[in-house]
Length: 301
Image 1 (cartoon, rainbow, N blue to C red):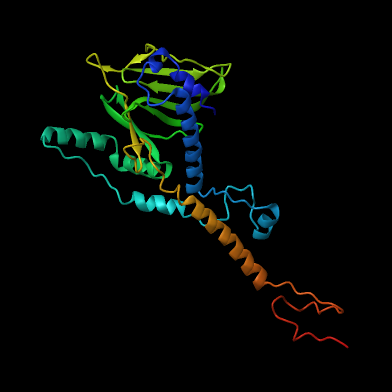
Image 2: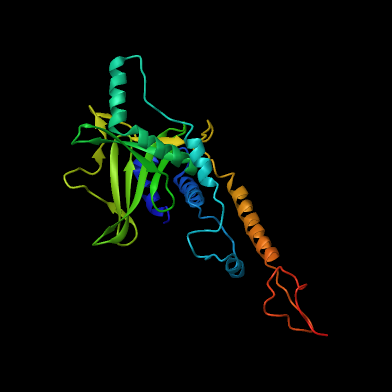
């Protein structure tokens, strides 16, 4: 999906008035590039590698070129799992006992043990991932949810200000509607409000109003802006770039080289181990097996 729909959600007077770190056009182009990388990283982590096999090579290796199960030796998941196991957040400690009790209760209610595993693995793989906070009216507490990075179809995107802080966040996903079919949903989080959009019949975006809620929905506490409820978690971020670096990005060329070596080794072993014999001037006995030689053959003349 093109980011033109997502970009249009920011093309408002309010968005243009923000202190944006880059223009919307430059931001959209940058997000398209990042989305393509995220998609590639996820494919490699799942073992979907760029196996450039010709039909003849695939037939000799006895693999289906169109199958989701590739003929490779996947080391990408090992890198992610090994590094993810090194970091375990067990809780928070503060100088105020009441604050420690509050933070501990919040972590337990949000299953921090499982949540941190998802966010850590996603950040290591995708370079960036996100954590969003929302309010649960039924339980009267803050709820944390992991929001994966945008991959060209769905996910979270953010726009930073000149100081690298998240100034606007957009959540994109696909859903099916009886009136619109498969369509795009976009929710935009500003510091003081939430705007919801849905794909229109002509390919653009139109306002989506939740029943019983105003549009836009205010994001205030005691009359003051709450702030963008999305935390950007970059892997190996830097002071000059708010985005991170995937742990497998630099390993992908090595994985490709390993796969090519594996193909060649397997075929070399098969062709050498089961040599093709041929004879000229006579017909060998049918009992001669490959790789046994012709010393036992009985020939006349």
